[in-house]
Length: 316
Image (cartoon, rainbow, N blue to C red):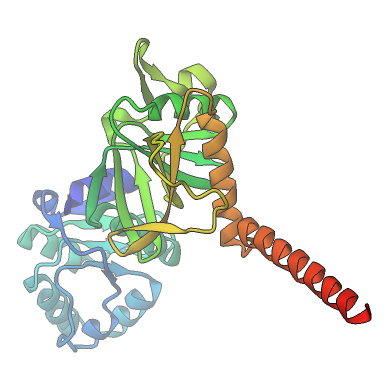
């Protein structure tokens, strides 16, 4: 995965000060660097594939150097051809950077965001853009804060379930195709491809835009995937879990996601079942397992009756 410097400039509304010819350069590494020790002359650990960010601290130190050292240190950084040099809000860009940007065709960028905020936003942005991705044939909805990946064979009714959930006040994230990436282990994020954002495909009706039908609150751009709801046709030969004690999961990238299989029959309200399954997963994440509570209560009741019967026999 990669993005160009031009894409970064557009998305963050940065100013290109010099080095315009290098805007087509690719950014491959999501990590960022603030080159303080490089300005001091140590280049043993210079990460040349990272965007170099300069804030007030770096530029204050740079101002302490004499002109000859400034020229040498800057040239040494440019020789290693990083994708871009980025200066934050309260920093004046030295002329030597502007000149070297033209000479080496490396963009010199100006942001009007403070250094810490810029670093944080850019870090999250690049990790999202450059993370490995998978495209899944599924539908993703946000049910009261739980990202539910609806999965099943084509025509099983995933989009219709999503439509009913949106009518109930929940949010659509993606229909038919979900692009997922892992921000970090345990944090799996799903979103729709650009062409499919806000759209649902309902067989017999066609393509509908949920925002235009139900308002902006019916859609969100991305969501953490908290569970997978597998919609499967009812099979009389299958021994379904009736208490909910069995737990299944599926690993996507390095993230383990709870998996709930929901059998389909004409008499079952799938949207309500998916909604309850999402609420149940959320309770489990909070340490509340209703199935275990139920079986524990039954065990206590049985133990109490056995103890009562035992005492009764002993007293006879």
